[in-house]
Image (cartoon, rainbow, N blue to C red; front, side):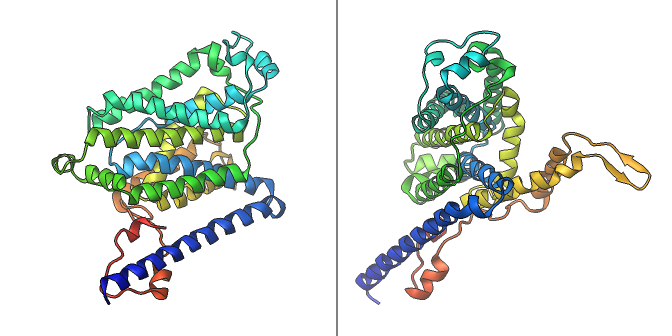
Length: 366
């Protein structure tokens, strides 16, 4: 087979891959159009929460998994996005009622924007703060980077508690308009997934992986390490801000306690369970995590075994997840997917086989 013939076949394979992707997305949206009719509200809520976690977990996995930088501050960007969406979408009258300790500052007390521009602003501010955090933080590596980003996450929570004239303090914000539905949550999860997969298969994604494997070697071959680190963090901050905005609109109420380190811990469990560096793994692990969270509610309720009464212990779910994380780190370090991604190559290879030629980048294509 000549080179030109192989080139034609690869073009046909890419067309088949595009058609299969469009069919997959179309099938998902067809399901979503009927989901609220055929599913009960509880199941719909589980899907919504899972989709929001998918968006946030994939964004977090870009830095921790693909770039290989141990960051522990995603809760900061999520909180930022959540408060921006809440403050911009809440009606002016609701703001006046909610702020009983100190009034909300101008101009936030007099504006009310539609959901989409508010959500995009949440992503933009998440990206801006990610850039500002990355400039000093990426001078450090390993555990030192983790400590700095952990501190940034805690600072945001403390500020949320004390900037009462903006966040309403520990009282939080209630009656946030609930614009989010399955189209919003699943739509952003799909968009994030395809964006991350395309990014990973691009030259930038290859540079991220090179930095993960060996920073010194990557810099030696001409990769601007600092620039690529900042780029990955900015992209991650954008999608984490979007995820926070979706979460605020989905829940309808937020407060600083929601964005404590436990939120980061949950995302860390998801990306480790799914596989560091695998966006497909983050999607599957998010669904597993949310479903298990609901199923494990029973361990926090009182239990009667014959004449023995075991009182309910709040927080037992986190104990179970902590044990699960320890088990994964000890015996299943690659997680569900390792660094692999699902692809259509199994089907495409049977339609347009190319003998003796490896489809470069197939592990990164959908």
